[in-house]
Image (cartoon, rainbow, N blue to C red; front, side, top):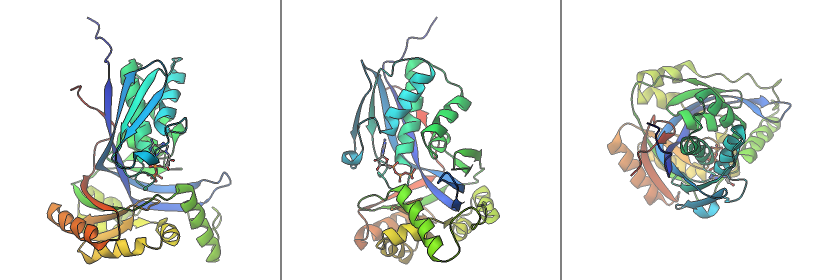
Amino acid sequence: MTRSAPDRVTVRVPAKVNVQLAVGGRRPDGFHDLANVFLAVGLHDEVTATPADALTLTCTGPDADQVPLDESNLAARAARALAARHGLAPAVHLHIAKDIPVAGGMAGGSADAAGALLACDTLWGTATGQDELLAICAELGSDVPFSLVGGAALGRGRGELLEPLPVGGTFHWVFAVADGGLSTPAVYKECDRLRDASGTGATTADVPDPEPTPALLDALRTGDPAALAAALSNDLQAAALSLRPSLAATLAAGTDAGALAALVSGSGPTTAFLVADADQADRVAAALRASGTCRTARTTTGPAPGATVLPQG
Ligand code: ATP
């Protein structure tokens, strides 16, 4: 018996926080080599694919007005890339239910790309192998492969060469969502500018090769929040703070409220607070909301699974 094609497919896909983001020097191609330790966390977008005459896109959610609905949308680019790979027309409507902050350093666009890829692959019955899906993801953006696989992983190269990492427990997090976004390329440029200005230089010849910290990998493996708190690091943090000095007050509000550690999430401006447990997460989130230093605060845990097809309801 052949199974009939589904008439809609919804994929849930997580946000990420970088528990370590070690940034090497600027390469001749303008990118930076990274040692990027990703942890997927339980804030999600959902991408629904339904058959349509042509590729169309809609988006709902608190930040929906900031999401481009044209060809530049990463979900649309993912659908086109998969269709081209299989010689198909991208005849699909994609709906993004967006809960991940836009331009917040949490890989929301990358999540939508991975979600659209898996949703279309399931809808079209193209049964693309995991390695090929990951190759398409890497062409779409440095963070897209991780959005597909989730969990925890070390990303090398631009972050797209993934090695899964074992995690020995559940970590509790609070995320403070800022008003407005920060452009990831602008934050890298500021990182280079600060390195040049400090006299050390910003190229691969000046900056040591980025490496994951053994203590951080141990903390993930053992699931020890205090050890992870001591090992968190983000080489883009100074640049994000330089472009958005008000983030210092948000970081201070979270640590004053008892967070084990605070850092800028990726290129920011979302800030991430590692806490001991769910009760502390609620207390820190309430204090952040009351501080007036952020738009809102969200509690969640990680690791979270990667892109997942939801049962049809
Ligand atoms: P990263 O953490 O991977 O650097 P980010 O979380 O900072 O990314 P995104 O939310 O991915 O940033 O959005 C960055 C920009 O990408 C947006 O300003 C927007 O113009 C564009 N974009 C394209 N497609 C999407 C999408 N599906 N959702 C959100 N933004 C998108």
